[in-house]
Image 1 (cartoon, one colour):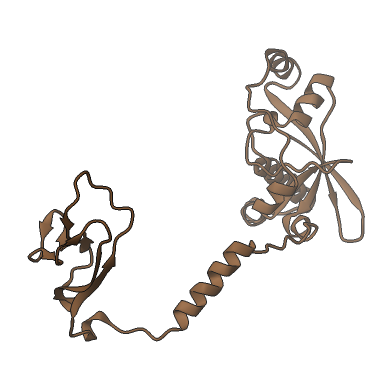
Image 2 (cartoon, rainbow, N blue to C red; image 1 turned 135 degrees about the horizontal axis):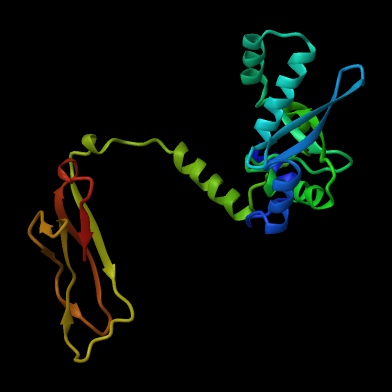
Length: 242
């Protein structure tokens, strides 16, 4: 249904019914709209049903009234007719005769511009009844292709997923990070610098801060390991702060 709305966007107005059309509804049809609905059978025989509905009725209400009118010609019982209405009212869609306009949106029929134009000209709107299945079958196929940058990401993700994984509960070792070097160090005075690291959970430190050795700030290089907590003891929300 969403694709049908995309290919056949409803031609509707979001504004209220203009005063001149309201006066015409009161004068000629007692706030109701008379609509002619054409039904084409499998052998291409056309049957016309004229229905009268409120101007606030939605398209499915018009379809329901058409089915009710047709059931009278078929001498159905009232109970049988109501069952048919509930079963089939949402299986059909209304189409403007001679146009590719479909009443796909479940809004008041007086919001459709075609209905308003018919009211202003004081003519009876002409609609046709189609099955939704037949309308959906006419929609062109839409093929979606991933952008190249997404394809590269998908390929990289597939490669990552192909690597064997290991549960952290099986890692009986401490979390270690290696401090190699620092670049673009901006300090006011020449001196020695070091790196401090700690594991936090929220604002709470989970271990003692670990410090690297002090080196000259002009070309800081450490090549040093810092050891922290055991990996299985790390909570999921733990953060390493340097």
